[in-house]
Image (cartoon, rainbow, N blue to C red; front, side, top):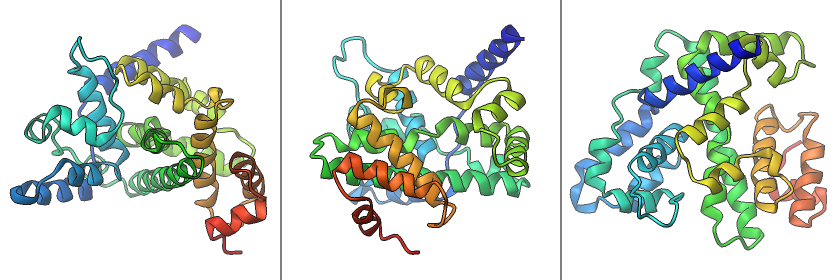
Length: 272
């Protein structure tokens, strides 16, 4: 059974390493508009569009790592740096936006809705993470932001390419509120999304720092804890500010930022 699971996980890693990663229609549209305005085209403007789409972000990083020069000493994690290394002409030619998530999930409204919710959640997590990093005087806050943005990238990819299985997992958890995500994923997929993401990160040779920042098992490190808490808060607050898990989130964020939980709620603009 274990061998079967690993074989299927390996197959998914190979498939997701070869397939064109879809992007949101809005991302493709915004990049097209920027490209047509050559006079004002800039890496900063393009980066601003990319960093709101987790799949476009990882698509760029995957391409950059595949083409990384053997003499390149420093790993590139920031989007604007990646664009400057590639050049905008190369980016638009080699990292296309033809495949749209909305097209891949055409006719599968429930799956598309779930994908968009995860994407919105990832953006909220990245906003929380960068805000807290700045409060903690983290000079490399952009790295923390990207880690939070990509924390659930394997879930996004599976919503695109295994929507039936993902809907099955969702239905199981809705039916049994005590069912843990990793257990449901094991039962349906034969592996967890965490293991898939770890395998993809290694296969794609993503920057080691990014892999560490996305690893909840390294939460003893302040920057990783920042990312994990931002992801947790985004996930729980997506259900509304009455979610039962939020009081613990406020306490944990308070410990991170050396704040009282009530002050954390004020900072977040919590509406009860």
